[in-house]
Image (tube, rainbow, N blue to C red):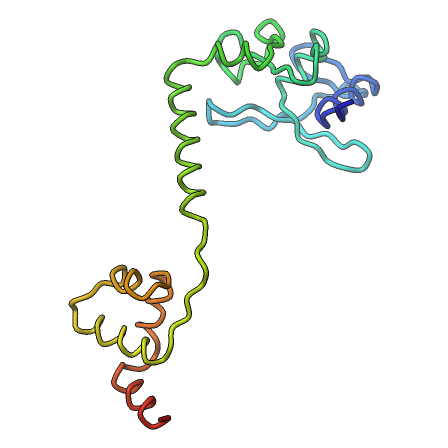
Length: 191
């Protein structure tokens, strides 16, 4: 048996506590309107906050309206669909329950293409984020890197590819507080 989604549990609590949809607004048991946090972005939904069992929850306003004004969803996997496509129009006549397959069929080709593009870019970022084992530089390598960079013949990226660490490590090595000549002298004195 699946655990009930917290959103449905909160709405059941609200129905049991006598919240209702009346005069175009969700009303608390004492009759006052609930505050709706509205979004200026047409791609985002409006939300309401409710305190249940000493915890504050944020739920979609459209889901709450659809539940209170119409009926509860057939399953917890059903979504609220805005018939006219306007996510800010939470009137009961504009809302209906649909499942994931119906929702996928209603998506415009442009939106579907954008979702695929987003998934690909996320996968590419994840591949790039896989970190290689850290590479530690010896003092002699640091001096070589400084000389090569100061000569102007190498970029930080080229040095990173040649020596192995990240370009950030090479950049920090090059930008340390003293010059390469002083590093070379320090190495000679230590030897």
